[in-house]
Length: 161
Image (tube, rainbow, N blue to C red):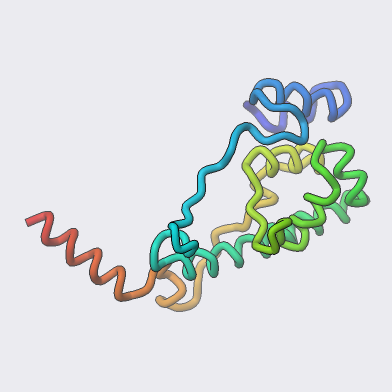
C-alpha cells in the first residue's frame, strides 16, 4: 500500500482509518488477537538476557514517546483530539507519551497502534519509530553480555566442524 497515496484520497481520516482497520480485521480501538510474550517463567524474558532487552527497549520506548508527543504538539492536537481521530483511548496515548502502560512497566505499542497514530498525525509510521543511529562504543554494539556471545560463538563453531 502506498502510504502517501492514502493521504491524497478524499474523505475524512476516520473513513480511511475504518477502511484500514476493516482490512486488518479489527475494530477501531481493538487489537487483533493476543500478543505472545517472550517472558520466561522467572519473568526475566529471553532468559539471562532479559535485563539487556529491557535496557535496549527502554531507549527505543523513550525515543518513541518523545517523537509521538512532539508530532502531536506540532499538529496542534490535544491527547483527546488525537484519541478521537485515531480511535485509540486518550489514556493509552498518555501512557505511550510517558513510555508506561497500566501495569507500570514500559509501553509496548502494537504495530497497528503505531500505524493508526501515524494516520491520525498524517506522517509515515517510520516517523514514530526511533532511527538506527551509530553507537559510540563496541560495548553499545553488543545486544547481549560478552560471556553469552563468546559461549554462543563457541557452540556455533563446534557445530560447524
